[in-house]
Image (cartoon, rainbow, N blue to C red; front, side, top):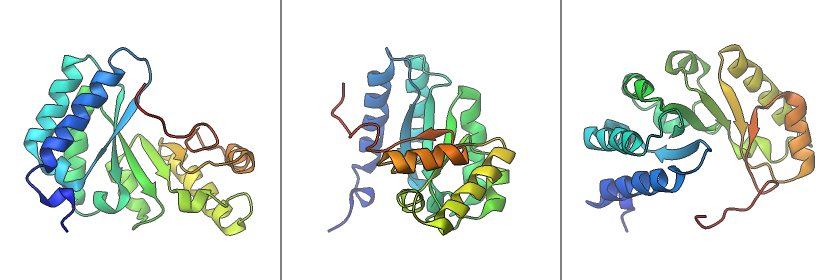
Length: 184
């Protein structure tokens, strides 16, 4: 069975997610994220639609596009081009699941993402695993030296949260704060 990315519906679904996300957050104050695949950032129609929706709902400086680390490395030049095209519209970039793919630190200096989301595989046992603690501590310091904010994924208990706070992580997501919910 093919996954949805190999069907004619893929870009229609991406547009629907962009539109629905913008509609939900148009009357709210929080920033919000939309996951983009490598295919999305190559598609001129998708990029135009994203900009159109941001302008329609006046969401400049509130949209964060999350790119998977492994996909961001597939065509580095295309990612840099995408970021340059999106920044004038106030779109921020996050590298998602950092630590699961290439983890090539040199490309972070060139891509210049706004956020680095540290993968849950490094976070979930950080309070007990000294090696993961050391990795996350140094990734956080490196990101901060480049002016990149850090977000820890999979924060599921108070011990993990306190350990991450001690390291100086900027933001957190996970079950410790709230379980995923239906649209509000």
